[in-house]
Length: 136
Image (cartoon, rainbow, N blue to C red; front, top):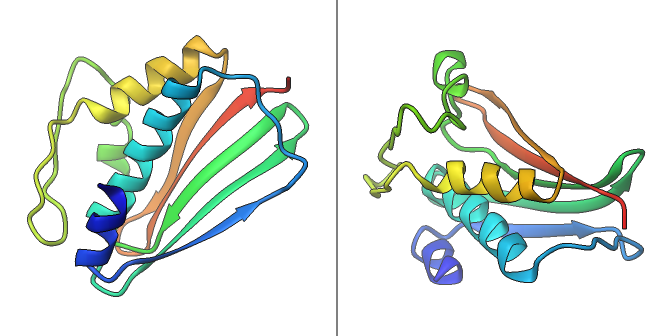
């Protein structure tokens, strides 16, 4: 599904994965996290955009990031992205729909692995969603 989504918008993605990266995690949960973050990156990318998917060892464990160069997120909205009290769904660059629950699930799954999730974004310049898991 994600590949067809990217193809429709002619979005290219590049992977930068440190070959020595290893994480102990529930396979289905980590797949859902990555799929949701990648789907969101495509959703908010412009036609012909680019996404960078990275994973590397860090001081605290393993760091995963999905970075797009799309529309970005204003500071006010960033504060509520992972908040399950205010479900909020923003249409994508081609008016793609969402439910607003994906990031909340990502947060819950990351926290079940004793990890952290955050966003770095600037409106008009794209977003970088990162999460980290403790080392295996």
